[in-house]
View 1 (cartoon, rainbow, N blue to C red):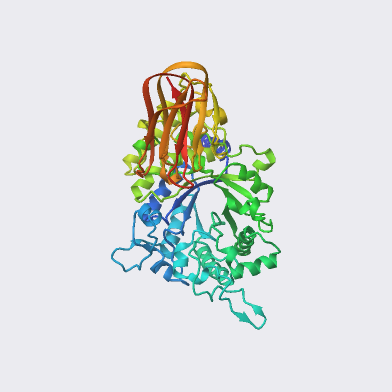
View 2: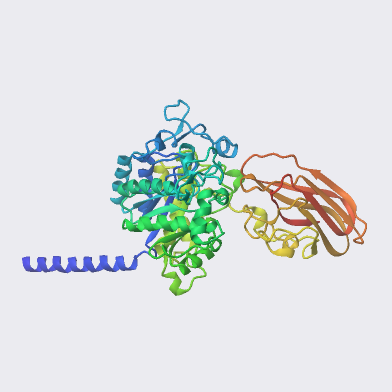
Length: 591
């Protein structure tokens, strides 16, 4: 009897091991990198908050937490070699990002100032967070931004900015170009001088301490959105360009990033950079590409370019993975960055779109990014993270073999309930308002299919459906980049005429316009409707002015004429308020 019992236990154990192995094989993640980025620079969040997110993210299947530790908003990591970074560069005078950044304040303060806003993490706190996350299967990936987005550092250390050509001292062996020390006035820019040995020394010292705290294989070096304006007027940069044999300041960023990447590699680590590192107009060399990664944040096409240059890629396109964008109808949501990324859109992301089977091997994974310009509180951060990070995790875990949308949606709503019970503040996905009702189905009207002649062209960046856009019957969604909203960005930016083909009785003409000030989209200053029966003589039937009102968020306004008349031709003209401002419209509806 005892032998039979032992045999039963052995058999059961073998079956259990086999079952576990089989399940593991079936559940092998589609992608090794399943990440979440939280920007703690624009607004500082506590270590306890980050630990709470680790708990949720690890349960969902996320295995990387990328911390955007430094930016103009504040420096968040203790650096023992430069204590002023956390005494001053971690603190500013205003919590509201719109007032501080967009309002032009942009001043920093001492930690001891009673009105100081901000904070930082000690190295010991970060080591504890690394251990906490590691115990739950998550690697913390630090980001130290360079060469742009560095206003907070340059406020403290202006010598790290560019040196204007004037005021550079002569030395016995010629002009000096190894330091940015001599200029009495330096350009007010957020860019480091990419050619300065002093900058290189500063950043290598910082990275040494970062790599000592974070054992992550990958170290993120930023590399995005450098303005470069001061570089062309910098003596140090001009001498470096002579050495490189180039007249393109874009080569300076390539040269700088390659040196910093090589330094990280020399320490046995790999570097990640935003996709600007592979832009063609920088003339990037490929010396530091192999073994490093590009985080694709703009368009999916940059993945192919990065792979061709020798990088691996992490897919994080803003149109799918930016969690600072609205997740539901903007009029009913807190102020966000202006885009529109729903749970459903993330769920249907294909990280390998347009890539060959060989190129797909270089896709490390996917990542959702929460930038926090408009996310001031920890509660609001959770609202923007969940349940959308659940969709990111599903893409990372299952690739294109995800369960049907309806089944996932039900699971996501259950996860929201669970998180609420745990004290988190997720978005109430079950009661989402959904897409803009006008955009769900086409709207037939008298001018549908009518020919449109543009006296002022639409901008090629936002063509929508081209010349068919304004009379195809389709209205735009909440998002200006949805392919239905057409964009105009010139002085007299609206001037087009539609031809309905025959004289028709009309009782109503209407057009919708979008406003999204965070994307420089405003209502037209003036709108004018004119009608004609012969296309030669036009008669004005409506002229409307829109006073400038910047309320934040995404708004819509209908310009409407009602009456009783006849027309074959309808001409629409309009003006914008300022240079570089956009006007977006989707359809001219004639009843």
